[in-house]
Length: 196
Image (tube, rainbow, N blue to C red):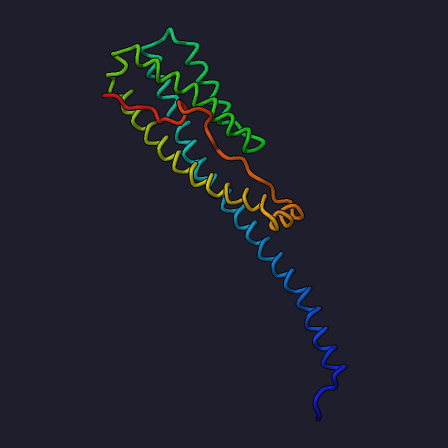
């Protein structure tokens, strides 16, 4: 057994290089793909956390509406808007954009409903109303925390979808940017205030 010939050594080097040229990109694609897949799953999981808080809010609204209605029966238009917005928010949605839009509308109408209480001192003093308002405020706080977690995962996904070279893998395998769950105005961002 002698040393390999120069032709054999050159062929071995070329073979190793060719193998590296094929294997390294394949490993990189697999790693990036798995990162996208894991991130997509994390986004779904974080949206389910948002969904839990939205359902909690949806469950509080009928009691709040009934309480306000008892004191402010002539505010039927605002009460009807809240009921309709809640129904739309609870309905199945085709995508996250539709769900977010429905929740924005519900937040606006709920803000109007809570503003009515300012005109009714007896309603503002009602213990049941105050407890519902306090619970809604806590729910809004938890919803905001869940939304921040969801949006941080969305930000990471969107950055990977837009950044080179991971955007190539995203395009090839159909990973797309995801919409943020944001409220439109600063008035909507504020949790309902609890007044005693």
